[in-house]
Image (tube, rainbow, N blue to C red; front, side, top):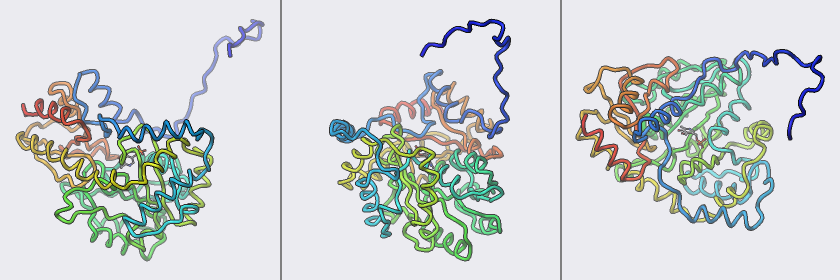
Length: 401
Ligand SMILES: Cc1ncc(COP(=O)(O)O)c(C=O)c1O
C-alpha cells in the first residue's frame, strides 16, 4: 500500500513524534554471539564463536520438507504440533529414557528451544517469584525471567570444574522459588551432569514445589560412551520428571539450527498451562518441517550416530589445541570446547576474544558474557560443529599461540 500524501497542511503535524519507551529489558544489548560473528566476518576470521554447524544437514531431510509441501501440508497444523511428530518424540523419549509421555497431552512442538523456554517461564513465573539459574548460562534465561516479573537467583557452577554446587543450590531455595533451570549437556562448559548429580537434584527438590526447567538441547551429544558416559535426562528420574519441563531442539540434533523447531515434554497439568501461553505466543510451528521431521524420525540412526560424529570432531580439535599453550578443559558433551588462556595473555576474556579474532583470525566467545556480573576467569569457548577443513584452518592459525 502506498501512503497518500498529507493534503491539508494546516493539520499536518510539524514534528512527527515517536514515543520514548521505558525498556522492559533495560540491561539487554546486542548479544555477544551477534557481536563476535560480525567482528569475525569483518576481520575474515574463522568463526568458532556462535554455536551452529557450517556444514549442511542430511539431504533426505530437505527432500522430506519438499515432499511435505508437495503433499499439501502447508496450512496451520494443530496448536500443539503435528500428531505424527509428537508421537515420534514420545517414542524416542520412551525408548531412550524409559518415561512414557502422552503425545496428546504431554508433548508440544515449539519454534525452537528458546521459544519453549520463554514460554515456560511466562506460563509458570508470577511477579515476585524467584527462579534459580546456574551460571554461566545460555543468554535467554535471564531476560525471560525478567519479562515475567520474576527474579533470577544466580548460583555459580563451581569455577574451574563447572560442576553443580549443591550446598549453594540448596541455600538458594526459599519460599519464593518457583523453578530452577538446569542445562545438561552444558553450554558453554561442555560438562554433562552425572547420574549422582541428577539424583542429588532430585533429593533436594523432593520436599519442595519447585519446578524443573531442564534444557536438554544437546541431549544427543554426549561423548566417551566407552567410559560409561551417557545423557541423564530428567525424564529418567521420576521425582524430577513429575515436576519437569524437558526442552529439546531439532535444530541441534539434525544440523538445522535455522529451522527453529524444538519440543517440550511435561506432565499433562504442566503442559496445559504451557499451552495456554504457547497458543498466543506462536500458536503453531511451521507445518511442512514438522511433517518432514516426523518422517525422518522413523530412523533412530541420525541421533544415535551423533555422539560419534561430534566426538571425532572434538578429538581432532583437541589434538590440535594440545599443541598450543591453551589449557584444555574437559569436553564431555555439547559441541563446545572451553580453554583457559591464562598462560598466553592477561587480557580480560572480552578483550582476548577481540584480539584473537582481529589478530589471530579465530573467533571465540568469552564466558564472562554468560554471567550477569561478567565474572572473568580467563576461559573462552570454541564451537567445533564445523567442517574438518574449518577446524584445520582455525588450528593452523591458533598454532602461533
Ligand atoms: C543451552 C541452550 N539452550 C537453548 C538453545 C536454543 O535452541 P534453539 O535454537 O532451538 O532455540 C541453545 C542454542 O544455542 C542453547 O545453547
